Picture 1 (cartoon, one colour):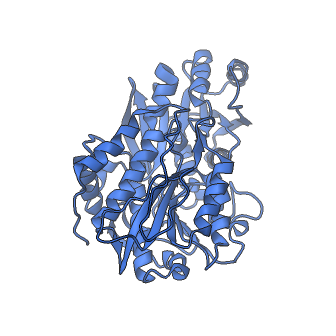
Picture 2 (tube, helix red, strand yellow):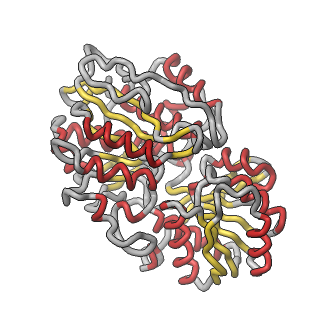
Picture 3 (cartoon, one colour):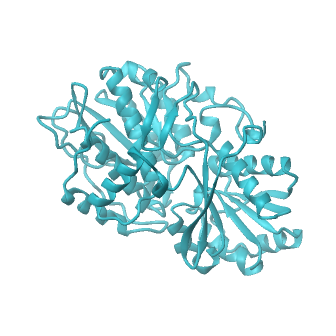
Length: 441
């Protein structure tokens, strides 16, 4: 295991200033692309300056692609810091190459979340930059659907991409909760270039259904935000819940632009639901949705997947209405990580001055490690890096022991549940679904 070198406190302290602005919306920081020494920097319209603190000048680039504006800003900025942290542990060098890093934004202030046009333009910039060796991202599955095929057709061969947070199953495999033609339509060359270190929503949907059963819920109404992630996990939850004998009263879209959800809440109340599963993300007017649902049904049990993380954003958006809501997230809590995982968390907290680290920060660091190791095994040959992703076998990694399978998925599958109590997120338990329930098999 490579010995970790500490990053200067000043670097992360300056980066931490960006964490203060949370909430859907937010200002565009307007960071310039900066000079990259011996490499061509990605456009300043989307990416921060090239970060490099090694000897000489960078020979190649890696980048991350996250929504750096909106309710997820504090989380995604911390994830970008974790990637830089991991690169610094390697002295900004992989094999014989000096590696620079750019943090890129796929969101807009107007959307307060990822934007399809921004995702597409970013993808073209990555694919067209000959100095790029790989991408860490995206954060949102809907954005990944636009980026993967562009990187798959990059000149010189498919460009490697590792996501720390995409959970939509159709990016890597077909079956329940996916659309026709998936995943082949994302890989026009016929070669895979995408992997992820987070387990897909087949696990999370099944785990939520199991926990709903454990809570004694009998009749659940499902809502979705109609986006790739939200509709997919809503469907997977519904399928698993039906397998367990839970009645699904409906699976309906909520309009993220609505000024009120009172009529929707009235319909759900009339259905006799004792629980509501919210398949979607907090940025899609989630706070207002929760407020209106709880105003009409104060005793109804709300459950949500990791689209409602960081949980602090849900608490901020929904206020007291978020109390008692259960929110799941793939993986185990960071304070339960061992070995390299505990070492990462302790070191990152020490250098950043943070008292807590979000689970997805650990995923970002692991995604970076997986990409860096693939670059190393490929001797920096861009055409071979994507192939090497599928030779990944991690022992004592940040997230534990796992492989990347032939589809690009991790072999891990544990899901953690938290409950909002008095404005704070409290750990409840972890669940690892049986294979027979995963994906409605």
